[in-house]
Image (tube, rainbow, N blue to C red; front, side, top):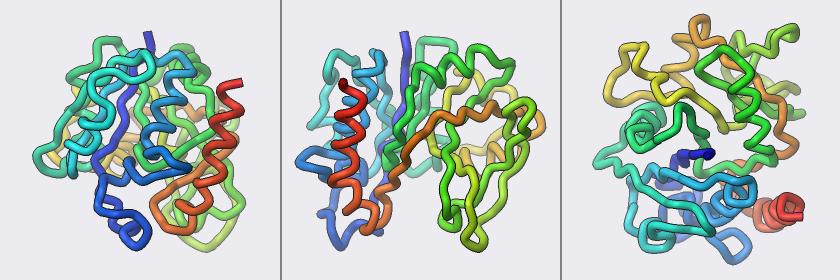
Length: 238
């Protein structure tokens, strides 16, 4: 059984001009909460248990989705204060039963097959496989350096001038005990603190299985999502 964690605790401050005060994953996209589209995609791909990491206005998410959605068991890991993405993942992993789990950001939609990501993880010797996607302009995100021979992530480059390259698409498959091997603070970022500092030991497997990437964190891309996400979702369901 595939289990997944979705980081759904964000406030979405940059979306305030176009979205009322709700958790960012509850922003409406084509008549549905953005999180509805993420969960629907996971259901189609065979995920049967999801832990939603919630914080800001968690009751809006809990009230909408409840304990079950499209055949998936829904659990909640509640942050009483922001823990950062790393702290949130660590808290949510306490409710994972399998030896590994998917982790997705609750504000990005990536056109990828999570079953292939899990297979990539299971065929590797690492505690972490991460989905990467190629963009013509990476200035908003920074780039991922990948060793061609092994498809291993060997570096992160901070945001700089506009250029093409691979970026972190925000979907991972990781071992349930990934944090037990390292000393970490209560609050930390998985992307900015944990991965770069332990890159040589982790040697994450790069999964180049993302054909599209939408981050709804800014109003322009949120507007694009209104038409693009239903198109991607329709392709997956066929």
